[in-house]
Length: 196
Image (cartoon, rainbow, N blue to C red; front, side):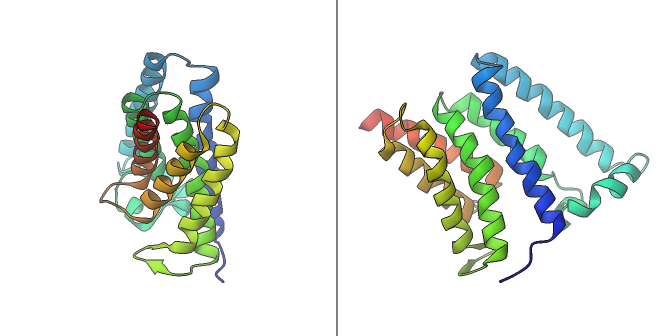
């Protein structure tokens, strides 16, 4: 059993707040085009922040307040997880119809958070940088999310989406999991819904 650092707890607290994105699509930006515009503007802002934190003239504030929760590859100048969340959200909203994209984004917010926490705390059966214990936690968390939506979608579709989300969390596919989780799980639910 390993301890979870406060930096990881803070990261995952922010990550679970990304549930604001699908909630915004439900209650605020109900039209697809409005949501796409909103996410596009947010992504532009994220890239502006990414540029500022990698600029020696402006990165002091980032090093002082945010450096502690960045992963090593992010400290080297790669995109942060927060930016990838908006990339994944935008692609999911564009490609995947509602309500599948909304559910998939909840899978990302909740499932990926549980995967990280459990995977760090109970790192059983490591597969690369991920753990089977974390992916199982992701699957269970996504099933919990599915219970909220089982009145609008068949539970079989939701279970498949949860399973695909957990597989996307476990296996990188050379794609950031903030993109692969919502995109793959959303597409899988949509495709299965067309078949059954």
